[in-house]
Length: 186
Image (cartoon, rainbow, N blue to C red; front, side):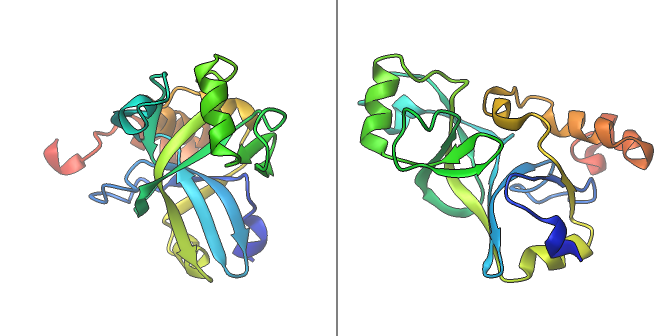
């Protein structure tokens, strides 16, 4: 059963057939929570043109902001790999944590204790209601994989991340690795 395969910490790779959907075309999503009531994830490979300093001027850093998904895009979320520094964070898996005390986080960024390989910020998130993600899985919208990067995924370059994942899948997916993002423009 698909829901048994889905676990927080897994990666969801958008099937190449998702074309024209600005949020999900060539997306890789870190599944932050999955239970019988629904699922939450963050698109980890869609940087925006903003930095954290653009959104929160009192933070003296230029960490990129990512499009986490189409839900609540006016809210800022973050994942990190330093729970010993950020109180009240929730473990996703593999040493990756979600949220925590934001005031402490701001201070730690400003004093240089937190670097770009420790934290990733998102505007919005991706959410699915009960059984919605399972339905999308049955419709072949997503490929589930383990997060082999563990907590190092936070500092991973996103430039070709979807392509790298497709190449790792191999087989019939290889043809898609060099296809243009929108094949209709080819």
